[in-house]
Image (cartoon, rainbow, N blue to C red):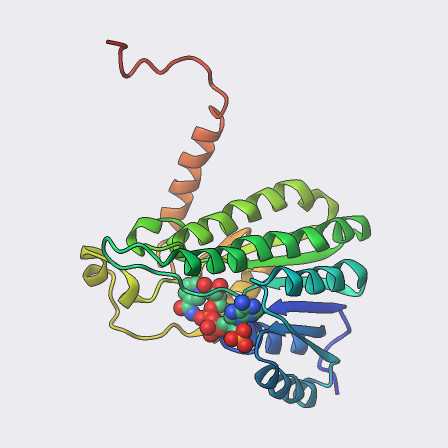
Length: 265
Ligand SMILES: NC(=O)c1ccc[n+]([C@@H]2O[C@H](COP(=O)([O-])OP(=O)(O)OC[C@H]3O[C@@H](n4cnc5c(N)ncnc54)[C@H](OP(=O)(O)O)[C@@H]3O)[C@@H](O)[C@H]2O)c1
């Protein structure tokens, strides 16, 4: 038996494991039918069967590599044509870190950007106009705390996260007045991935994060209308100060008076 009133369909990328799988369980319980996306069909099928049995919801799957343009188009078309979709979770991503002065392999960097940047924007753009036209819909984008300080992880993980954070702000600005809820979630970076002194000073050992807590906290913050959610940031006044500074700079985005800090020679 379904647990809750039917709320439409949620499409979740990277849904067979980790954070995406927890979103799938929670959204099924909250009353959504599901479309699960990941590459490995067998694992996806096993999980889809489990979820159907547990929740009583309709659970479909699309085996697709979202870094592959042809596969991405399949998912984009599904989203664009299926008006029952009311919730999108852009979660699939790979941790593309590079320690020290090493550069990430260029192909690996491109794959990671294709997944976290290109797929995220294509899927969000596939649903946003329909959500706005129908006056309801939710887009949750999974980023990373590295979005705030990409230099401490190397590679493109932080840069991808920063893109997702910036994109989410733009989507919110463009579509929130039409009834579209948008949220970006920033999970913490695994301590082992942090470089330099931060690797030692941030530490709570090598523990993995509690992804059940992460998703439950993020969904609760979504219900409260929070745009940027960092479920593991202990002191939220730090974020408030950051946002105030950002707002102050934003009022000067098109300031054309030279700052005159450096005098021409
Ligand atoms: N867990 C953390 O500590 C942490 C921290 C910071 C940020 N994040 C971010 O949170 C998101 C989820 O992380 P996670 O740790 O939960 O990941 P995970 O456990 O490694 O699971 C990744 C999921 O994405 C799918 N996937 C991977 N590449 C894909 C592709 N090219 N196309 C389609 N699906 C793909 C995987 O299934 P297949 O292999 O079958 O495709 C799997 O379902 C990522 O964006 C990650 O960057 C996580």
